[in-house]
Image (tube, rainbow, N blue to C red):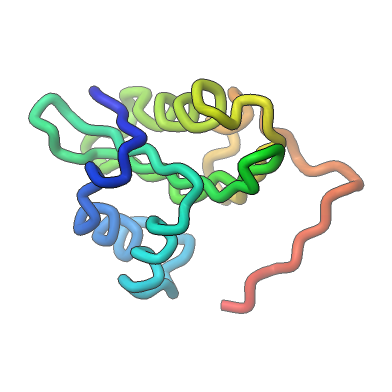
Length: 133
C-alpha cells in the first residue's frame, strides 16, 4: 500500500464513483461539486495498491494555521479491514502539516476509527448548523 498527498495522482473517476455510489454522506453532490471540492481542498491523500490502482481517499479543508475539517474518508470495499482507513487518517492528521491543528469531522458509523486518533464528542464550545440538503 502506498499513500500519496499528490492531488495530480488521484483517480478522479474512482473518487467520483465511490462518493456517488458507496457512501451515505453527500450523495446530493454532482460530479462538478466533487471536482471543486478536490480542487479547493487544503490536502488530499490517496491510497494505492501495488499495481498503482486507487483504493482509498481522504480530503481536508483547513485555514492552514490551526483548524481543519476531515472529510470523505473512503476505502474500496474489497480493501476494507486491512488498516487502510487508519493509514489515511494518520497520514492526514498526525503525519501531515496539520498535526497540531484542532480537527473536526462528522461520521455516522466510524466513531471507533476516529476515537483512536483522539476525536471525542464536541464540548460546550462547539455549535453546528446542520446542512440543508
